[in-house]
Length: 390
Ligand code: SF4
Image (cartoon, rainbow, N blue to C red; front, side, top):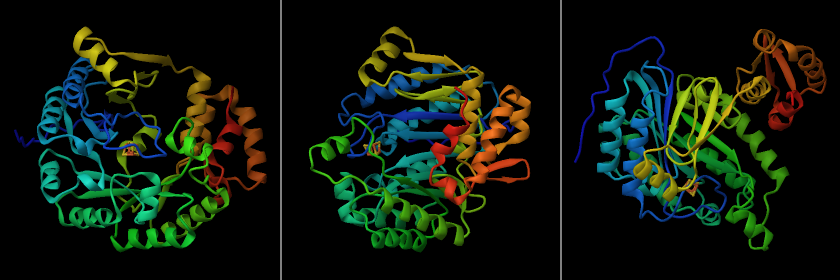
């Protein structure tokens, strides 16, 4: 079944709130990955039924204004069949108004992208792709255990550029032991050759309980080299800024007018609903997260009609710490007025630490905003931690 959706819904005043759908299946396990997914796709049909039922159960989680963004992440949402994707979008449009200009993103892996699928994704309303390229070098892709090869990384970009999907971004990883400085420079050259409007560039980190952590422990993989990662990050910042991209979040660069709206709204504390196992939701006062277990999630939803989730109320220190952490990572920084207005009891301690950070050259003031300096960006999490209130 193929369906075309009319996304021309009414425009109300607050087209910002977001909807996230987590698609927890992958073809194979990338060694560095700690997201929630399964490489067994046996339960994929039931998972789609459960996602649709959760959408129904959560219909009133957000207010009734139109959705400003929809994001299908994972896992690998580009593994969804046409029929599954059609059913999901049919349910979304039945249950929510979608703003005329909503950003609708699908995370896609190079090996799933074909001209036919691009045309289909456009037809269901997807207007932005986030492509997991990671590297254009075969040795990196093999080391990471990616499902695609370098030829597919190039080919999919040719096809996307020839398609009618207007926005796209790619992910690249730096700091891998297989990525020399020269290879990183070549990855950047290829990025510019395709004139891609947005880049998410992540430093390889070794998360506990990943295949990579085990491989390093057993001596099967080298550990990342922190100095090389720093050199590659500095090179990345210089090239992106010199080429007119805004470094608008620590891992994200966009040409003006091409920033990712869905993620920017997360960082701005705008409410969102997350559907699917492990997905998080936020309504301004509480945060909740679904159970990260595919069979148990499906069973709870389809057999008991219950969403399996945990919830926390966001008390004052938590809200303050989250604002510091997310704000500092963006180019808009932390607003001193907002700290005074919403967190006045912390203002004296905040100001003292701010002065020290400024003297150390890690932050600077631009009007009322505190932003990271270049040196501060190298230790963003550490700078934020120094401003936290416990
Ligand atoms: S495709 Fe993405 S979600 Fe799946 S294992 Fe690789 S990095 Fe993780």
